[in-house]
View 1 (cartoon, rainbow, N blue to C red):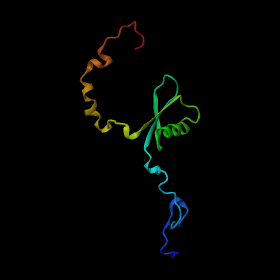
View 2 (cartoon, one colour):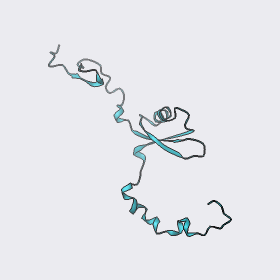
View 3 (tube, helix red, strand yellow):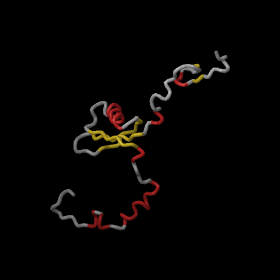
View 4 (tube, rainbow, N blue to C red):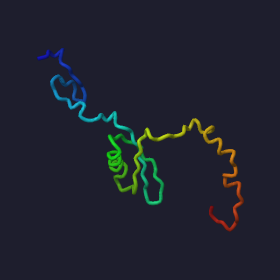
Length: 125
């Protein structure tokens, strides 16, 4: 038997110092939540509307991410469709690079609606 000074202890789980020598801890049986990938969640509120980013969550796989997103973000029947996307699969531009990234569109004035004359018989455009 180990003396109290030799016993390995841990405070994991918030239970204070608990001896772990010779005790099955369950370590290694399932992946830690810290290793679960991050998913971004998008919900479409009604048919015909766009999907809107509503938040993020961690999940062990795509199917569990979809189920967790349903439970967390559509509790009151807010959505008709949910997308979950792994955050590491998203590529985005940086707001700090806005000017150089979008600069090519600024010199194509023919793409702006102010370039064209709108006939008076067209009420809404």
